[in-house]
Image (cartoon, rainbow, N blue to C red; front, side):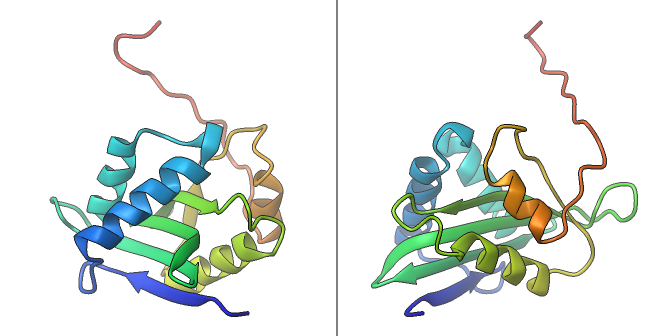
Length: 150
C-alpha cells in the first residue's frame, strides 16, 4: 500500500516537531467534527503521559512523510460500565478518504488495545457507518452538562 505506520506510546514518544504535525493534521482534517488545537494537544499529552494519566496510544499512517490518517486512544483505567479505552480522535486526510484508511486504522486500534473501546460520534458524521461496520454499537445517548451554558 505504500503506507508506513507509526505507533506512539508513553515509552515511544514523537518528537516535538512530529507532535505538532499530528496536532495540525487533526485540527485540519477533523473539519466540522473537530475540537480546538488545545483540546487535541491535551488528548495527545494524556496518551503520552505528559501529565498525570493512564496513557494511551497514537497511531499515524503516512505516505512520503505526510500524515494521511491518525488515531488517538486514551486508557480510562475502568472496565465494564465504562470501557478500558476511549477513541478520542480518528481522522483521514481529506484527499485520501474512501481508500479504506479509516477502516485500517480502526482495525489496528482494536488490535493494539486491551479491553473494550468507546468513542463519541455525532449522529450526522458519515464516519458513523465505518464504526458500525467494524463492530461498534450505539448503547447510550450521551448528554453533557457544560458549566456556564444553558
